[in-house]
Length: 328
Ligand SMILES: [Fe+2]
Ligand SMILES: [Fe+2]
Image (cartoon, rainbow, N blue to C red; front, side, top):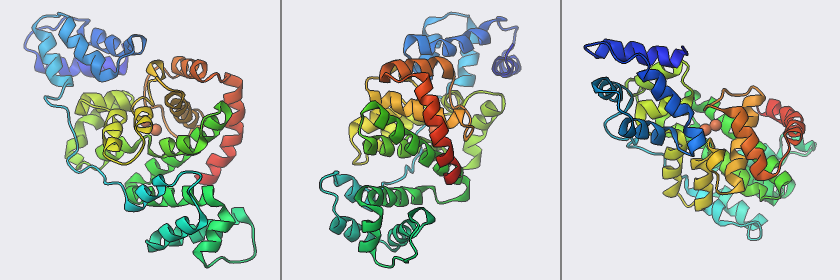
């Protein structure tokens, strides 16, 4: 018996007045495992299990344990920083030195970060840059735009508790851009999608500790993050992230990719599969733990969708590893 089923059974035995059917919890857990074959999210698989199967009255008790009455939505979702909307409106063609200098000058934190990026050891110049215009020119328009977007969004992850999530987001963004380049997809879009792929976790992470007790209990029993969130909140961070991004001025296909970043088997675009592979790279390089089930199978599916070979991914891993260490 796996640890997940053991916890479900102990909770059911504590709540159900008689002897529950011995395989009920196994059946529910298997319904979740088979969700990948049926193209369902975990929330959809659990809903279908309780609607379609009939295990008698004990099933209702189990449903009360694993399905919150209403789908949870945090009341205070993060607002998109103002500079990000200006930066996103700039396309590759319209992003000019003048525009980026103007946007950086609207916010002292952005200005300071842009100067710091241009003076970082990576650019290896003896000359200290103190003007925004020169900073943009040294970085180049695309890298300056990325630095400004990252600085603006990074403000949402300012607390120490969220630092790890922000580091993870930057690592996935860089992997997504690298994989997209190999697949002939716009790397800037993939980079942005990577940067916001786990923004839904921000919604859950900022809840008060008492609202997260159930999620913590599921995680400690070995439920992967997406499964644990679904049991605790009726929703997972991929779906919550998509809802959040819909309210921002981010193109809808980026939100769609965020919604599907753990489910390449249901991907409708290469970007969705690329985002899964970028997340998976971070897991394989050991910078984060797996957030969902069936990684090997899903990796194969995502590779097929994007036309990538596993060996190509491994080569990218080797290059990315150097970069990931630099970020960490
Ligand atoms: Fe992630
Ligand atoms: Fe995720």
